[in-house]
Amino acid sequence: MSTVIAQGTFDLLHPGHLHYLREAATMGDSLVVIVARRSNVTHKPDPVVPDAQRREMVAALDPVDDAILGHETDIFVPIERIEPSVIVLGYDQHHDEADLEAALVERGIDCRVERASPREHHDDELLSTGDIVDRILDRRKSTAESE
Ligand SMILES: Cc1cc2nc3c(=O)[nH]c(=O)nc-3n(C[C@H](O)[C@H](O)[C@H](O)COP(=O)(O)O)c2cc1C
Ligand SMILES: Nc1ncnc2c1ncn2[C@@H]1O[C@H](COP(=O)(O)OP(=O)(O)OP(=O)(O)O)[C@@H](O)[C@H]1O
Image 1 (cartoon, rainbow, N blue to C red):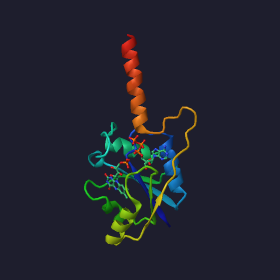
Image 2: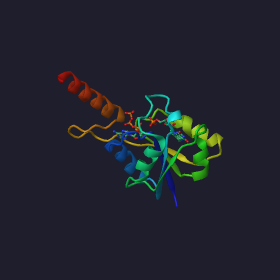
Image 3: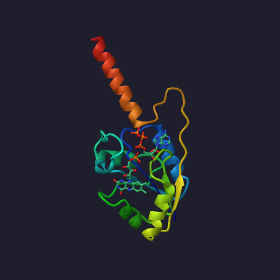
Image 4: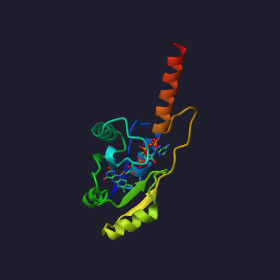
C-alpha cells in the first residue's frame, strides 16, 4: 500500500486546501497530512487557530485518511515513521523540491517529491488564509467607520 504525505498550516480552511488534498490523495492509496506546529510557521503571521484544532479539522476532510501534528524540531521524524512513497508539496510552498529530495537521500528515506497544482479561481472565492483574514479586517474596519 502506498502512502502519500501532504503538509501545511491549514489555518482557516478554504477550497484551495481541498484542491491540494484531493490532488495529493490521487497519488497513492492513503493520504496522511502533517499539520505544521505554530512554532514552525516562521515565514508568515502566526496561525490564529490552535494546533490541535487545525489538526482535527484537516483529519475530518474527505480525501484525508489521517492528520498528525508535525514534529517540534525535525521535520524528517514523522516521514521516517510513515515511510511514504511520495511527498506532495503545495503549488506555492517555499520548500525547494531538489533540496528536499537531497535531504531525503541524506536521511536514507526512499521517497519521491511532487508539486501540486493551484486551484483555479471561480467568481469571488477566497483561496488563501491571508486573503480571508484581510477580508475580515476590511469588513470590520468599514463597519466600525460607519458606526
Ligand atoms: C516534507 C515536509 C515535512 C514537514 N514536517 C513538519 C513537521 O514535522 N512539523 C512541523 O511543524 N511542520 C512540518 N512541515 C511544515 C513546514 O514547517 C511548513 O512548510 C511551514 O511551516 C508551514 O507553512 P506553509 O503552510 O506555508 O507550507 C513540513 C513540511 C514539509 C515540506
Ligand atoms: N488556492 C490554492 N490552490 C491549491 N493549493 C493551495 C491553495 N491555497 C493553499 N494551498 C495549499 O494548501 C497547503 C496549506 O496551505 P497554507 O496553510 O499555507 O494556506 P494558505 O491559504 O496558502 O495560507 P496563507 O494565505 O497564509 O499563505 C499548501 O500546500 C498550499 O500550497
